[in-house]
Image (cartoon, rainbow, N blue to C red; front, side, top):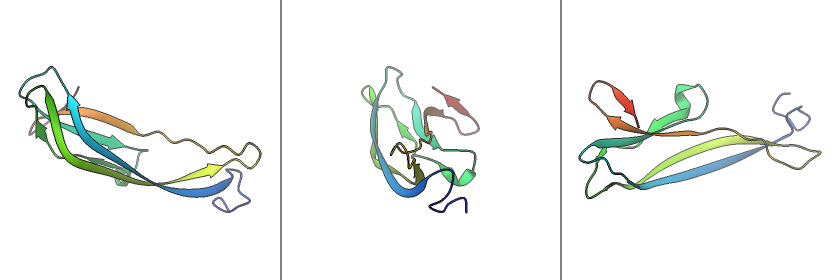
Length: 101
């Protein structure tokens, strides 16, 4: 099978990643920002933080968490793990559109 131990991808290993978004320094004053994350093309593999406003040169999120569960494959010959991309973008919040910073 594709996900079994004999697959061409290698041995599947599940990982749980937790990324904490705490703060961001910025020179732009008095704007609402959010952090959006995305891995792959599925809508299930994306999310965003709450919208927070810049104050005193930074934006502070109250320990926002991004939790991802991902399967990486271990190459049986090299012993290395496969890689997967994660996109994090900082966006200016607008009620009817997004602006990527």
